[in-house]
Image 1 (cartoon, rainbow, N blue to C red):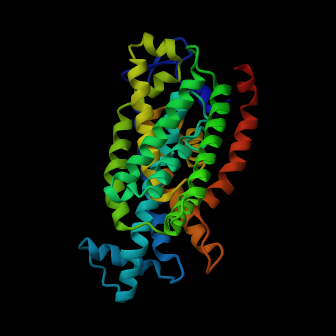
Image 2: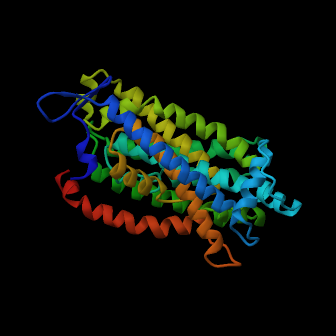
Image 3: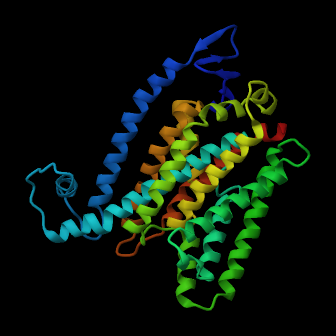
Length: 372
């Protein structure tokens, strides 16, 4: 049975009323799962980050890369390193690793939010057109030079585009007062295709070659241009939205039980929907503004973590944040070292992993989709 189908019947405070004869205390199991999963995922994230700092055209020993970072925070290891190695780590690779971690965290958490909002494990910022909306907003900002007005102009445009696309798809799928999952997927494909056509039109009519190159960057998805400026702008927005989403964990649990049940348990359905969609739009928009359109992150990571830690969003959200960061950093390493001296786009790596995963997931959920 899919872990998605094992969502609790009712979540209230620290009690979960399951399908059995009586209530069971779930606070303790949640704490136990977090106590096991968070340290392991943190260690994985640190290991992958160290691997990323040491990997590239100029290969560095792991001890050297770690020593440079530890010396920066006042923990002197005594391991010698050159000024060139320090520049490579601090000015080239570290901002790229941090940007990859932020983008991976944002897209994975956006996927969790959208899957809870639409009550469908196939929902993803790319699959339902939210990523395309963010990309269109960023592309228009680049083509019109709107991004030059303020450092937040580009992520702001991407946020408006992703949120607008999400509202449009949600409105189509929920027409008539009942959310239709097949309509959601079809509307997402249709809206996403329309937005891609709009991006192509903007690209066609853009005369500035530099703007065209930047637009192509957004379409392919990559982290080669990531800098400390990107990290400073994106970090407070992504981390703020990620922390805010944790406050909606109980509401997302209730949404899995159905709209009527959620409302019966005191949930303000309309306000929570708007807030969750805004959070998903902000996370996706800022991620798109840094790296361009990177697909399937919000599909693969949440589904794998749901299999490992269960469907409770109190556990799923923080674990997906760490796993998403680690996954995209690893994808960026593969993009850098797969075909030296050339560098693949990160979006290519995630698509090669995510597209087959999506097809398998769609096959496994075919009976559930037919019932809708």
